[in-house]
Image 1 (cartoon, rainbow, N blue to C red):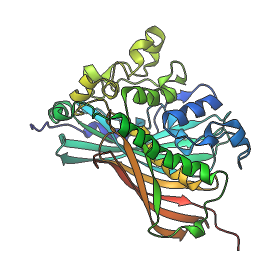
Image 2 (image 1 turned 90 degrees about the vertical axis):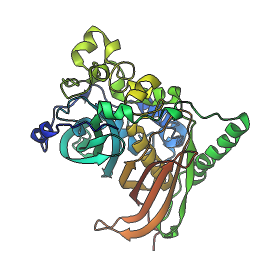
Image 3 (image 1 turned 180 degrees about the horizontal axis):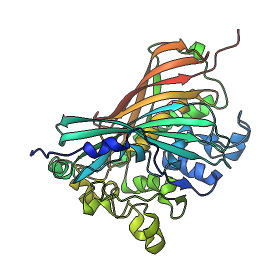
Length: 389
């Protein structure tokens, strides 16, 4: 594979400086929360069923912890994609989240502050010289309460080198027999039943031991339809839902065929069809295999922001409504491809009490497909209630 020499120096001028951001025009609606839970394959009644939610400690529907990223104007990637890198493409490389406690509820006004953090240049087998760029999103509500901080990592690499790395032998979706799909549905329900069994009860810190395995979570097979459902659950992908910031993706180094007018506020008023990156622009590779292969993917593939949400939902669902994910790290190793399933597992590695008196469960988690190919790995800390003395 030819190595493409890239210039990353333009990034430096943006580091540590707050950016102009896109903003939500209206408060959070209950159906926005429902749409998110549905799109992320998260069948937790707390986030969509009014009767169940009314009987919870929250007395009504609340958003999943993962919902914060739906409120951003760029899938969380905005502060991790600054500076011009000529003739480059971008993939989502990972997330780190810190959660502070306030829940997002219907009627809230969510705002985001975005600040580029740092970057590192490494040689990779995927695309030669590659930039790993990080940036922070700080999410808060109308009361000024800090909800969460997200540190995203993007992978920016040469367009030519990325296309050369495509494994065309993986262009076809795997075939699933009717019997395999039936078995898969039964396997998927195992995790859903865990949610039902816990219900409104507590998962006590005292009852968890180092070495415990969390129940596996399985969903899929993924498809163009399921990826499209995910795409549509982000506010940024609904015409008029956000007041978009000005941006010029081609000026940032994206190739003409991948830049387009995604979320361009001027073009939104002229021809909004051109502003939907799922069809024309940097996100088109997710839903169109032809364009997926241009950036190094063999066929349609899922969104990194969704993978980060799957991790948070998996851990939060296990923790229950009296628990809370306080910190996660997700390193994305491979994509969710059409036709594949996603399998999530996790193990308890430690227990502790932090300086705030929170009783924490330490987790290492893993995401892979049906062939055992690793999609993501990482760690997390989850706060659980302690039994009364």
